Every structure is written in C-alpha cells, then in structure tokens.
Amino acid sequence: MTAPMQLRGLTVRYGEQLAVRDVSWSVPSGLVAIIGPNGAGKSTLLKAALGLIPHEGEALFFGQPLDAVRHRVGYLPQRQSVDWDFPATALDVVCMARQPRSRWWGRLPAAERAAARAALAEVGLQDLADRPIGQLSGGQQQRVFLARCLAQQADLLLMDEPLAAVDAATEREIIRVLRRLVEGGRSVVAVHHDLASVPHVFQHALMLNVRSVAAGPVAEVFTPETIVKTYGAPVAA
Ligand code: ADP
Ligand code: MG
Image (cartoon, rainbow, N blue to C red; front, side):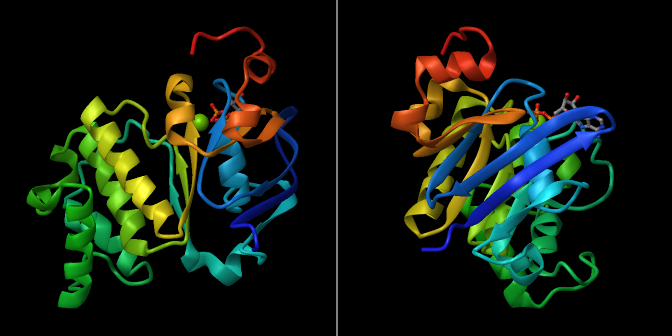
C-alpha cells in the first residue's frame, strides 16, 4: 500500500538555524505520533511537508505531490492564542471545510450544513453549533477544528498538538474520534508531547530532534534509550 505520507530528505532552515535536518520518513497507516522536545522542529516538519514554508527535499501524499491530492489531506495547525473576535459561529468554521473555495459566510446548500452539523455532533458539540467561536472554551474550539477536519473527510489528518491544553474529558473525546477515524481506514499523524500517554494512544512514532532519532512501531522506538537521545536527558514519562 502506498504510504499516506512520505518525506524524502526534508530540510528546513530559518536563516542560519537548521530547524529540520534531512528527515526521510515513510508514514504508515494508523495513529502516528511525532514526539520531541520544544523547538525540535515538529511544527516546522508538518508545515514543510504541506508546502507552507520553504524547504529542501520533498513530501509525497499517497504517492503523489500534494497538489494532486490536496482534498485527501487535512491539517490542524498548532493552537495559537488567537483572539477569535470575528463573528463566525462554530458551524461556520466547520463549513469552511465543506466549501473551501467559496465565501464561507455565504449561504451553503442545506446538505452541506447538515454534514457540518453531523461533524459537530461527532465531537459532541451539536448544541454549540450556533455559538460564536470566540465564546467557546479552548478545548471546545479545538473540537470545532477537529470537526472541520472530519467534515473535510480527508484520508490523512496532520494534527499539531491536538491534545495540548485540553481537559481530560476533551482529551478522551478527541482520542475516541481519532480511533474511530483510524478504524475507518483513515490515517492520523499528530504532534504529541505527553510522553505518558504515547503507548496507550499511538501505534507508530517518529522521535524527532531536528533530525529523525527513530521511527517505527511505538513498542520498538518508544524506549528509554531513544527518549534520552531525543530529549537529550532523561524525562519523566
Ligand atoms: P516544535 O514544534 O517542535 O516546538 P518548531 O518547529 O516550532 O518546534 O520550531 C523549531 C525551531 O525553529 C525552534 O528553534 C523555533 O524557535 C524555530 N522557528 C520556528 N518558527 C520560526 C520562524 N518562523 N522563524 C524563525 N525561527 C523559527
Ligand atoms: Mg510546535
């Protein structure tokens, strides 16, 4: 089977600084983690793979350049402390995924809106669909963006710290959704920083610290030795 994502010699520099160095990685299907300390280049790796920043090397998705399969790939950026004071509702935000090339605030066909509502229901937010995004908690916003990825019906989701700073209930909910996606044949690559939960949640991992330290099944690569190599020091898991 063709890998959902394949990186070949991916290298990113910010000026003089090497942020990602010559990473080659064939991403398997399933639930896959990118693990590494702050500043390891995890976000940079995803952005470069998606062609959002200048880089050397290449990324293929399902064996093809992104342009050929863009609709099959979804991206959840790392949560910023964005001040959401524009008037979009949760439903509007999900609808952007359904109609990326049109004005998202325009009227959508009823079927499109129904699909967006279904995606919100899948993440347990059906009752908040008409709430302005700025009035939702951080964890709820994160679930809205997850719903947007679901509505896009992408075959591969690249998620940058989907579980960062969410409460335990939200974390369980998001993991449940990700597992269901994978059971349905989708693939998820998530940047993850909570080492303790890695073995419970993920099947495969890339251990990254600018370069690739190790990649493979979690049972093989998520070992005390590689954790030390990746973090540069023992880390309490
Ligand atoms: P991670 O997501 O693993 O925490 P990042 O990919 O965000 O790491 O950053 C990797 C390194 O590149 C860090 O040292 C960071 O300071 C630097 N960096 C990230 N984005 C930029 C940028 N836009 N300009 C300059 N340096 C950056
Ligand atoms: Mg990051």
